[in-house]
Amino acid sequence: MVPSLPDGYELPDAVNGWLYDTEDTSNGHVWRSSDYECSVGVFDTLSSVSVRVIDDRVSGFASNVDLERVEYDRADRDDALVGALGAARAWMEQTDPAAWSHPDVCEPVFDAPAGYSLETYYLENRESIVYYRRDDAETGVEIDVRGEGPEALTRETAPYLYVHQWNGSGNATVALAPWTEAHGPKTKHPDIKPILETPDECGLEVALTMARQFARKHFGDGGEIDAAGQADIGRWSA
View 1 (cartoon, rainbow, N blue to C red):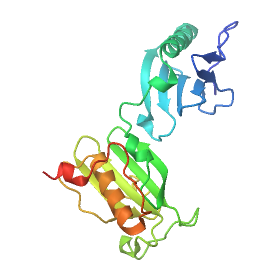
View 2 (cartoon, rainbow, N blue to C red; view 1 turned 180 degrees about the horizontal axis):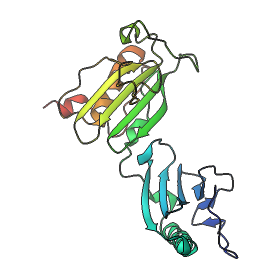
View 3 (cartoon, rainbow, N blue to C red; view 1 turned 60 degrees about the vertical axis):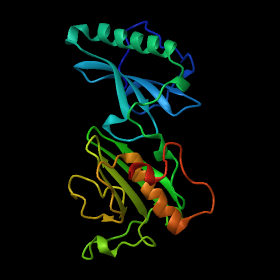
View 4 (cartoon, rainbow, N blue to C red; view 1 turned 180 degrees about the vertical axis):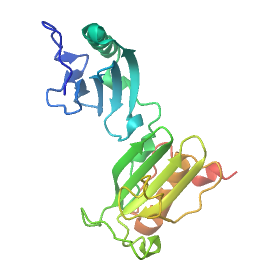
């Protein structure tokens, strides 16, 4: 439910390129950019109000950055909400949508390997998870590996190319996957089939580079497919 406003309080329709979204379904008061995939929201959890700026291209609990969070007693709820709305407005007045970027989002993720399209980019506190769907895979079809295991996956049949990093650890995986929940806590990753041996201290950009090299080898389009920030893997092999 969208937080109810105090009597007489009016929300601005637009602030410095941020436009109020009357159709938002995230249970907050949200302003979005029409040119950039980001938003600013004020949310009420019945014990606190928070102001968040969100990269709308990304899924997961860490897709947003808290600008302000205030705990409140029930009697002070309206004051806390008005304060949060004021803080959101002040931030938007000072920050053009083009000037904001999520500090933990890896931009090269959005330039998919040849033969694939980005389907999901999860950003969590402990891990970054990317699924690229093979362009010639039938939409909505997932490979059933039950009883056969991940060895049943091949680059020709697996719908997804999966790239995973434990944030800050240097541990990364490049694999084939049958569906976009192969990383879930209930699966413990049994459905994926690693296809590349990543080096020690392999960050997400290195894993992405290796995934792109794999795709270029097997699905190459003959053109320039390196993304900004993804230098040749030799950069990290010295």
